[in-house]
Amino acid sequence: MYDAAVVGAGPSGSLSAAHIAEAGYKVVLIDRDEIPRYKPCGGAIELTLVSKYKIPSEVIEREVESLVTYHTSGKVFHRLGFGAVVWRLKFDGYFQYLAAAAGAKLMESQALKSVTWRNDHYKLKLKRGDVETRMVVAADGVNSPTLKSIGWRPFKADEVYLTVQKEILSKKEKIAEIIGEKTINFYFGKDISKFGYGWAFPKRNVISLGWGCRLSDISNTRNSFQKFLDYEPIKKILSSGETIRTSAHLVPLKTREKFHEGGVVAVGDAAGLVDPISGKGIPYALESGELAAKTIIKVLDEEDPEGIRTYRDALQGSFLPVLEAKYNIVFDVYRNDENILRYLELWQKHRASEIAQKLWKK
Ligand SMILES: Cc1cc2nc3c(=O)[nH]c(=O)nc-3n(C[C@H](O)[C@H](O)[C@H](O)COP(=O)(O)OP(=O)(O)OC[C@H]3O[C@@H](n4cnc5c(N)ncnc54)[C@H](O)[C@@H]3O)c2cc1C
Image (tube, rainbow, N blue to C red; front, side, top):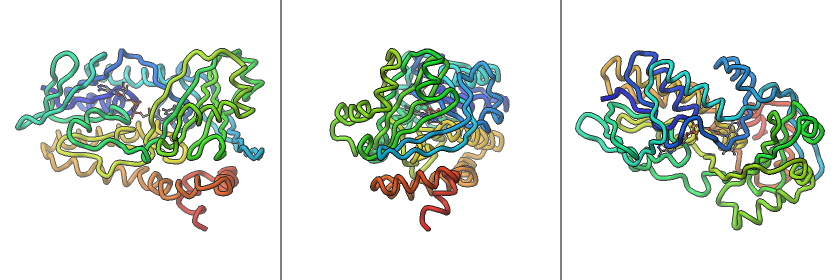
């Protein structure tokens, strides 16, 4: 019997498993894929995250010094921004390594099929065999089979972004010429995404070119995505190299109404803990993974199942108010191009959290 089973070995699950194992508990970290696995993601992170989690330099593909945003009206916005771009295969691999080094057992290529409560523990049915555990961390992403299995409803079409990302294999000099050596680029405008935006992030010899739009705002994915591909700056990027991979994925834009039930705690994308304007989720995945681990350790240490209630308070005391403030303005921001431009004007000079919490409503 495990003390905790963590389903999903992305950043949220891997860090959670690492902390629970460090506290001396018996943990299993389960993923449906073979590890390390490809994950469609821009991979942009802030410098504070690199230092907070001591991300090794070999995980970093590019250092970032500035951000540029293009609007289809022709306006361009600039700001400084220090950070890094990573491949998620290596980045998540680092956290999976931390989990294993702390003593968590890794189970790869083992998709979770169902979760059932058996008197005093959970039984997880996997692709091959079962696992018994006292507590569960649902870290299995936006579609979370774990939460679905315990009866939580899936995100609706107006609660998720559909994203499509292309990896363009190019040359270092070409990338520097087209999008900038240390610059991450964003593309806004109702013509190219009714509710969302596009991006081009430089990796060492690849440009990650992506597009996102709220799912309920798309009537024909192919046509909507094509409009983005036909936008002049994007055409230039596409012709700068060879497309080696195209993948689609959902990103939540609304947090769940609840974050735990019984002995199950939801983290990262499974819990909808993503910035609803930018789609940034890595910092919240890691932070929620840590907070969930602290909650689980407390429940196990004190043998008090009620202790799980402190998880919501922990999120509330951390980043949840910022995500909620951003959710409260996102519909207004994407209402029309005028509002998008007003947001970008503010974004040039202020942090997005400050815009959402103070400046937007003025
Ligand atoms: C195209 C795109 C670009 C993005 N760009 C950025 C960015 O630049 N910066 C940023 O901060 N955020 C970005 N995000 C968001 C970020 O990727 C997520 O918020 C983050 O990955 C969430 O981490 P997680 O650990 O919660 O879930 P995930 O990383 O999604 O991990 C979930 C894990 O669960 C596993 N799993 C799923 N089903 C099962 C099952 N049945 N059984 C077992 N395991 C299962 C999966 O294999 C996966 O490994 C982007 C997202 C997308 C889609």
